[in-house]
Image (tube, rainbow, N blue to C red; front, side):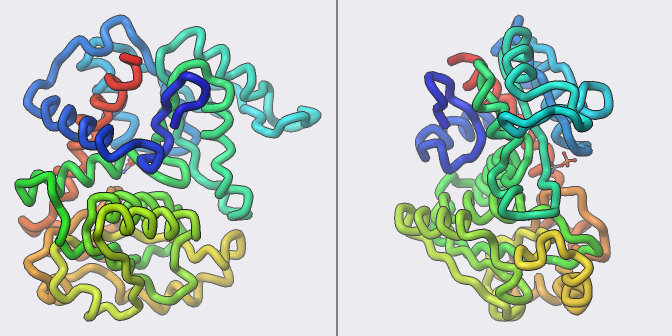
Length: 339
Ligand code: CP
């Protein structure tokens, strides 16, 4: 997305297909060459409002390997809590406003990464992505989404892993299943939104498999998927039938998420959620596929979301996808810092 003259990486949907393809090609090149100087003398602030293993490690190391430097900040922990409302009387917990935070960081660093999950109380508020948008509004350097209500870096890593597996950048015609899986807690829809977005963007025949219509994704992302299908020539089907969805699939991608109609009322969702433990990805379901590859963004609870056998199978490319986070983020940082 361009805000003024700055190009950010907030969602892949803001980027042209040609620009995404260029990022993926650059990421593939980085995979063969660990070190570079694309970020020499440059720096990135990594602002984490939530926990991370992969994102933090891969961004920090990616910046280092390209000659740059990363500063990790955790507002409310090792940095001041931030206010995002405009015109508010700041007599609560926040010590400073995003207007100052983003502008000050922009004087120090060349890029800002932001991880800010939903608050899980009111989807109509969380769907505005106020933290990420606040940084993009006030920063005078490019902002990168490190997972908010979408996870575009994961999308690129996933796309690269699929292209590597199938040995082609053209994934049209592949049957792609995004399956909801059980998890004891209601989780973010970000990765599901993103998987739906990138799989349709790449022209695959996509099935969104979820237990009931309550688990369908927000209209914004269903709409992006429909736009992508119209443009790329793939298809989008919503299914609540496990066998039908898995049969003949080339790709199975799993994620758990909370049902949006219950957003903020998770105790009421729990009894429904607990009826769908059988959505676990297991060998019997994978046997219905066209020898599909399986992946997940990680972290993953074994034998809850997917069985040990699926995770340990040679068809599982989740570790490749996780590795690709490093390479795709190098490509994103290099592209944005080189503006
Ligand atoms: N997939 C992913 O973003 O992992 P982390 O939450 O560990 O960063």
